[in-house]
Image (cartoon, rainbow, N blue to C red):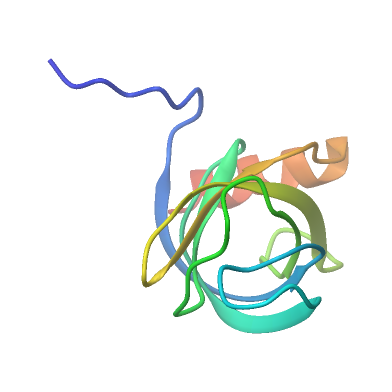
Amino acid sequence: MTDNRRSATRHEVAIAVTALVRGRSIESSLEQRFDGTIRNLSLGGAFVHIGRRLAIGTPVSLRFEIPTHARPIEASAVVRWTSGEGVGVQFEGLRAAEVFALGKFFEGL
């Protein structure tokens, strides 16, 4: 039996994303901006491929677009795990319109 602690279904995607780190990385303590790709996405969070590690607990802001939402989604998140390829983040709260748009997006996958 697999231990799946996630509360929302993950969907494999390839979505361009900009991540603004509002804290520290393992390599630096300066705020930084990274362009990357969301590799999997759910209503609870995402795996963001940015080619580097960030410290667990680091707050990040993500900005990405999906076809079912007229404006870019801007989501606050916290790093929950990290690897050399990127970070797993948990969203701190999405607006109702964004949750609805993501739900419609997932239906089309």
